[in-house]
Length: 454
Ligand code: PNW
Image 1 (cartoon, rainbow, N blue to C red):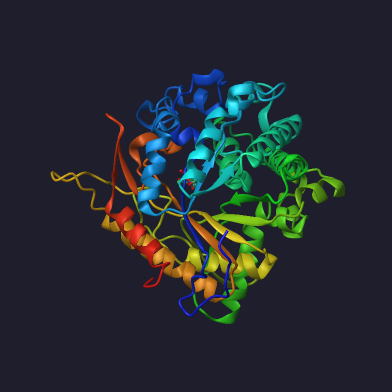
Image 2: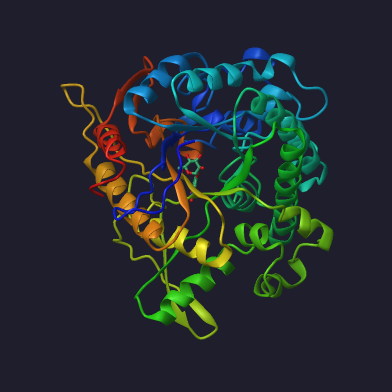
């Protein structure tokens, strides 16, 4: 890695890593190859009515077969890092037991290809594709799932660290997959289990994370860095009055009490436990120590903000006006301040040594012109503003060491299927042609100057 220098006057430290992110089920396809087992997303996407237009990840971007060309694309764009995820059911088709010997072949080839082209691999070990066989045994409602996850992650990190991977994330966005998968059922496995069971299974997920941190450290080559990727609610103070800024810090801690706060503090906040009353999770002090196993890096995914102000009792979350500007995804309001206040408040509250922005990006109604261009000026505006806000966070002391745009390619956007495009590279799903959008050109030129004119 390049040496990290003190923040210069332009705010972006030398050695800062610029990358792009993807996730296995969203890009790979090849769902029946190499002995891969089924995941909850195969089941969910093949259940009528669950995903827009009946889309599935069966083919997706066919990244499983096209990764060599896609790495060349990354290289041409000037990317320095690439975040991908490993599909658990490729390695353990039914989630536990004996690993499939050829299960990691694809990822080892991908890692070699990245290294050969000077691109640093960042590996997420769980980006939501839980083996269906484990869901059949209760999924995250079964504490055994946490053990199976740790066994899987220890094995994969051992193998891939010996292939030269130095950065691992245990999980992606606990808040999202717990709340959408088990809280309201809009994501796989499509359950709505109620508050008490949700709190308990979320605790089991946190245990899976903590046990995995330990397993990765136990099985890896020396020098690996372990973290997780979470998408905390990003409270932004409505005014710059000190009491509103304090309210934002309180909100960061409380709104994320079941997730990032528990992991970084090793405790549930009193407010959280009081709010849930009889529905609060059952846990031991020993479990809380496991959950808060020390991390080398915190990965933060920021897309949007939550405006707050000071109020009796601490803080008040402000409603989103119906005409607030938003992207092609209604949940994704255009509020780049999350990239300033998000990392800044995480730094102030928990002092992580290293923060990576592991996802940031937006959806847009991208279409190709008759000249074959995709002129996504809305995404250029979104990214430029988000990066300017990130630079502000760094100026204010946040230890942000890298940034990954979501996403390299248009891909399977979960319950929205292929109807929402997040890529800086356009994918024609009819023939799998890749076309860098205007935003890819913006991003490349920004990388070339290390953010000089943000
Ligand atoms: C994240 N929501 O997911 C994921 O990490 C990515 O896999 C995904 O493609 C990306 O953000 C864009 O959505 C989210 O409804 C999915 O609030 C949905 C929500 C939030 C995050």
